[in-house]
Length: 406
Ligand code: OGA
Ligand code: NM2
Ligand code: ZN
Ligand code: ZN
Image (cartoon, rainbow, N blue to C red; front, side):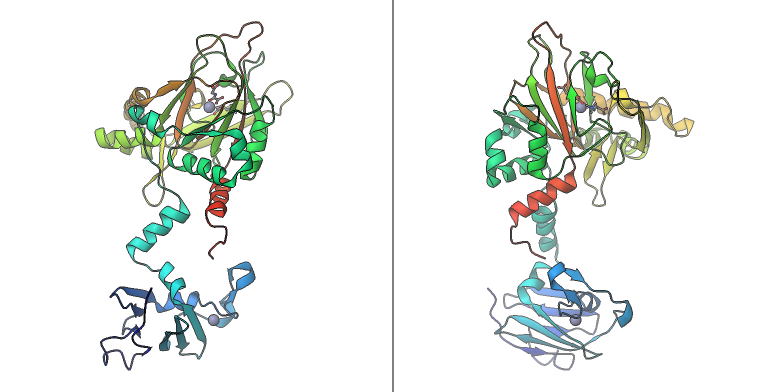
C-alpha cells in the first residue's frame, strides 16, 4: 500500500518540495511519485481522454462519450492535487473541467513495461507454451467431460490449457451425437461453416472432403481457405477404428515455426511473407449447397507484437494456382519442405477411444490421422465442431475476472 506524504503539487510548486506526490512536468506528463520511489507517468491528453466523470464517461455501458462537440482533447492541466484520504488525483483543467482518478485505477494503467506485460499476459492472452515431441507427455492435459460441463473452475482450466498448451483431451463423454454441440454451447457459440454447425468425420460414399476418406490425413490445420478460420476444433470419438490405424497425429505448429526461424531464418522469412492460395471448391455431400472458398495467406502468420498467430497448412487444400511472381516459387517450395520436415520430426501419435473428445487450437496445431479400414460392425465415426477464439477468450476472461474490471 502507498502512504502519501504530500498532497499538493502544480506547475508552480513542482520544484519547491522533494516529496511531491503528483505534479505536472513542463512536458506533457502528469507524474505521480509513489512513496517507494516509483514514478507513474501519464500524458495529459490521455488523462483528459479518459476522464471518468459522468459528462465524459457513461459508467453503465463502460463507454467513453463522444468528444466531437467539445473540441480537441489537447487541453492542459491547470492544477493537480493528490487527496491522500480518498487516494485519488484531482485535476482542474485549463477550461475548468474537473477530473478525478483513483490511484489504484491509475496504477493498473501505468505505461511502465511490467504493468503492460502483466495485463497482456493475464488479461489479454496467456502466452503459448511451445512444445516438441519430447515434451508431449508433460504438456498433455486431461479433463473429465462431466466436470467441464458442470464446474466453472474445470471449464476455466480446460480453456487455459487450450490457450497455453494448444490442446487437451476430455474423457468420458457420453455416446451422444450432440456432445460437441454441448461443449460449444458451454463455451458460448458454435461456429457455423460450409460444413454445417457440426460435421461427421467418417468414410462417406460421396465424400466431398479428403478427411471423409479412410486414407492417411497429412498434418494440417482445418480451413486455411477461410479468412475467419475456425479457432478450435472439437473432435468427439463416437466409434474408433479397431483396425491398426485411425490414430491422431499432432505437432505444435508454433514450435515448428520457431524451430524454422532458428535453424533456417531465410526459409522462415519466405514462409511468413509469401501468400499461398488456399481453396475449397465443392460440396458437403449430396444435399449441400455448392461452395467456393478461397483465402490467400502465408503459412506462418504473426501478430502486431511479432508473436505467432496462425499457421496455414493443408496439402489437400493448397491451390495449384499460386498467385506470386515466378521467381518466388522454387524458393518457397524449398522453405515449405523444411517446415514440413520439422513438423514430421516433431509429430506425436496417439489413438483416441470412444468417449474421448480431442480439442485443439486450429490456428496452431498441425494435426492428422493415420489410414484405417472400416469393417462390418466397426465404422470409425467422429463428430466435430468449431468455436472461435473471440468467444473462447471472452469466456475465459469472464471466468477469471467475474467482477470485470472496466
Ligand atoms: C479432420 C481431421 C482427424 C481424424 O477431419 O479435419 O483432422 O482423426 N480428422 O479423423
Ligand atoms: N472438415 C472436417 O480444411 C479442411 O477442409 C479439413 C474439415 C471437412 C470440416 C477438413
Ligand atoms: Zn470529465
Ligand atoms: Zn483436421
